Image 1 (cartoon, rainbow, N blue to C red):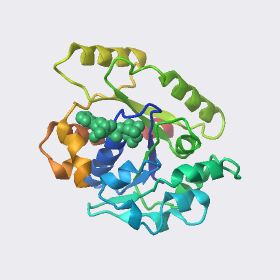
Image 2 (image 1 turned 90 degrees about the vertical axis):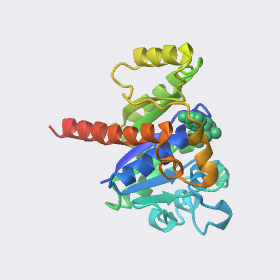
Image 3 (image 1 turned 45 degrees about the vertical axis):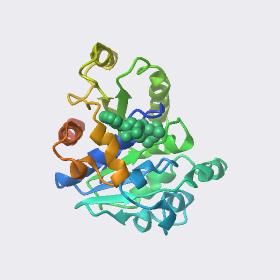
Image 4 (image 1 turned 135 degrees about the vertical axis):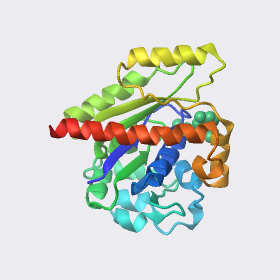
Length: 262
Ligand code: ATP
Ligand code: MG
């Protein structure tokens, strides 16, 4: 079965999509068959991989509505081992429709379960809210990857997300785990950045990734070219960081699965 990771933080603009795209890309580059699911109605992961939302035949909307299986929505990307399940902004309306629907929290989980062994990793990009869609992601996933922007208010509001994870664990997905907290947009020139990094480590002992993501303009430029950072500028600081992060994700998931098996 695939290792499913939801990239989640209800705070906006903390680097979820940048992380989802680039971790997925480098997992694929490391030989892991990887599916990136765009589960945010903003569709940034879709456009960030150069897909024109207006031309989509099928998307995650059809999948969550139950009109289509995951395989029919998935697109092969130009990058080896990397597939994309795109979305369009209509996913936001779908959320309203879903609110009345049967099994509204487990739509994504069922779609993923039915896709069998097609992928080694599935990365879900979540919207900046604790919405029905985000909860669908938490129920479908084994792991949460939590990007936290290195800024003054970084930790504010995270209690709510942890509380939601706790509820999901008590209810529909007892296996859900925090894979790691990822400090993003670190600026090594400022003391604030390193103070916040220290505070994040104090707050999440043992749970912070060794790798941090620096603030790097190349990471912000890459989506407008429709490619991951490893294609746009593979020698940039941002690219090196996400490549190392993908490696750490592979190690952490292997360690966790081995610990569960023994
Ligand atoms: P949303 O909550 O709206 O979905 P998000 O959490 O997915 O946002 P991103 O879209 O990944 O966040 O990043 C927010 C903005 O910051 C984007 O313009 C992105 O290009 C930029 N950005 C992300 N990471 C970095 C970085 N390490 N260095 C510089 N810019 C970055
Ligand atoms: Mg996003």
